[in-house]
Amino acid sequence: MDRNKIEIQQLIKSTMKAVGMDLELKHESCGINMSYNFIRNNVGYDATRIQEALNEMQTPIAPEPYIQALTLHELGHALDREALMESLERTMEIVEMKNRYSLYEQYNDSNLLAMLIEEHEMNIAFEDTAWKNAEEMNKKYELVDWTSFQEVKEQGLATYLSLYNEDLQLYTNLVALHSEQIA
Image (cartoon, rainbow, N blue to C red; front, side):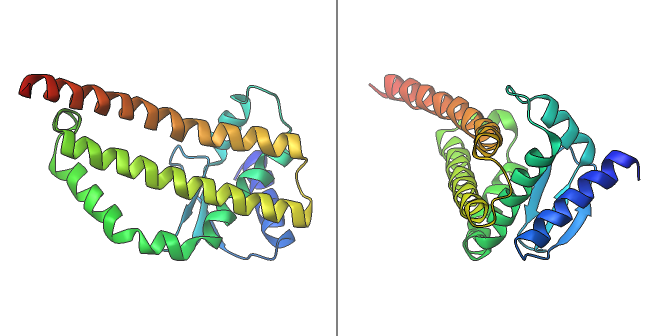
């Protein structure tokens, strides 16, 4: 493992230790900076993607507070594990739908697109809860300065909100088109 990967891993582990949460940590070359796997109860990270995402920040942030804020966020998901587990059945239904229908079908059938909207709404709710939990941990343990924390949070939520808004607009247009055809 190169020096940057080792430093990132050490920062994640030290953040976990600071808040008293000891989850398994896995390096994954998956293109997602960090993720929480609620089924296996572990945190995954892609050191290369973390470095890229850090460089994509609109306001420059040092690596340490960036990685600490991301780690707190993933630990925030871990604190919400029960709710994540409760969503598993519906999540699997949505995954099955995605596997059964092509993207064209998903985006041209209002019922299928409604399921994608529901998935977005679930993801946004879980993200919001994880950030709230991360904020509480950060207040308690004072690891990341407030400005940096907020910048990382905004970057993290922006992707989810952007994709949701795009699909919601498509859904609204599709429903309007069908309503015009019926009238």
